[in-house]
Image (cartoon, rainbow over all chains, first blue to last red; front, side):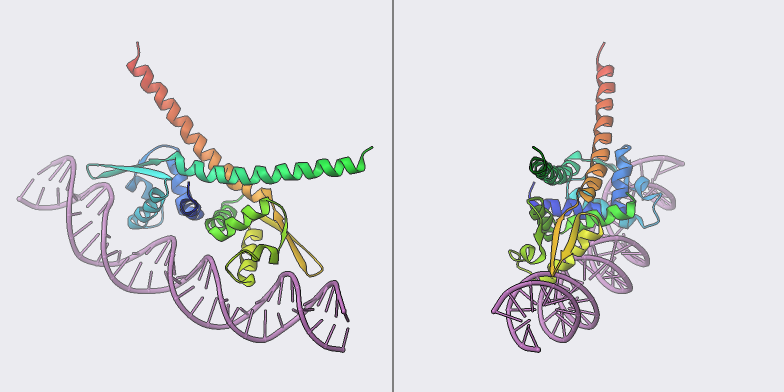
Length: 108
Length: 108
DNA sequence: TCAATACTCAAGTGTGTGCTTAACCATGAG
DNA sequence: CTCATGGTTAAGCACACACTTGAGTATTGA
């Protein structure tokens, strides 16, 4: 995944409403109005959030009749997760090696 | 970690410059000017980015003399990583169970 | 056919973000 | 002491973002 796409994934996840939508969708697919119902904002605003989520691969949607059904797309989640995992483990590995060197110094 | 803190973590990671700083710091600690040197922006701007990164627990810094040394704080990375991991696996588990049910339907 | 449902789109508004400049403070070297 | 280094802070600007309103389209049920 390109750097520019990761921008949008993290940007999308930065908003609590959008993270709420993702959270809701992990419990199963839902229509736009179902997603909007519990929220204190307009349906139009929810649609805009969904467009952001779809644009960066966090959510897939499909329109049947007049109902648009939304569901999680794990690809986006995985991309962000992998980025974080790589950096964190790289750093922790470095820390461990440093600890080893220090240990070696004090021992013997 | 509270929801509000996750906001700031993802918000921080949404910016490519800040993600670049995190990336750089996984290769080892650095001073503010070292971090700024390769970047096309002012040192003041870098300081502002670092404040954002520190405020949300992605980076720790320590000032000795007039030099501020920055290093990764894995806590922030882990918080975001965990959030993503939980949602993704929850959804994939759901998908697997759905596949099982469909399988059962077509079989026998 | 008529009305309700389920969105969709465009325009506008207030707030937040990234960046710059410019002035400033603290430390270390000569 | 004096100057350079390394960083900090504040003010301001341009643009992006979340949200609303309002008007429109397509589908469905009676």
